[in-house]
Length: 202
Image 1: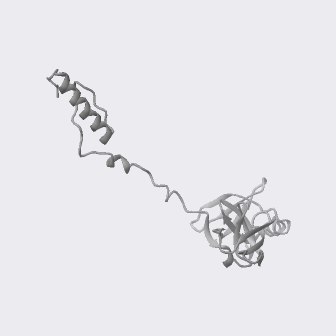
Image 2: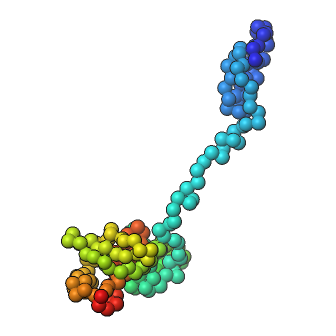
Image 3: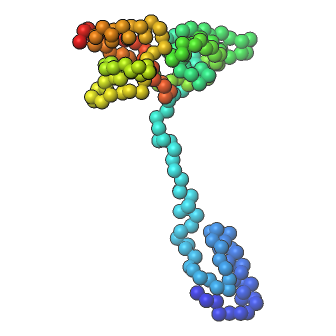
């Protein structure tokens, strides 16, 4: 819409109205020519909802649990590592102190001993730990294993375990031609063979 008036007072009035429109809607208009209509129905509310939720980006690797409820043989995250609790004790510090839990745990993948002290009323991170059984099909020269999954496909991204005793059992049983089933433990994005089941000769 072209503005016909060139009266200074009219132009000042229009200028003020344009500024008010800009303040309310965030749409900057130029004068003395108004080239488009102000979209009054499309206000900032249309822009306020243009966001992407990340809540469903993926399942969490851990969940919170109150320190005072974690027991021996349970799991806990210490120094960003998934651990199994081997010892837990509760103590108080002073007359007005809060009860504290002292955890001694073993990294489920490296077997390294880790410790932590947490107020019993505070939450700790607990890892989601899963165990899955697979039939052993083959062992490659570079130390990788080939496992048969439930749907008939193969899983070839795991190495032989670092534990010497378990490693020997797997290698010896495979060399003898036995049918072997291995248990794979997974937690916090890591996987490792943790046990062996001998189901007899082939």
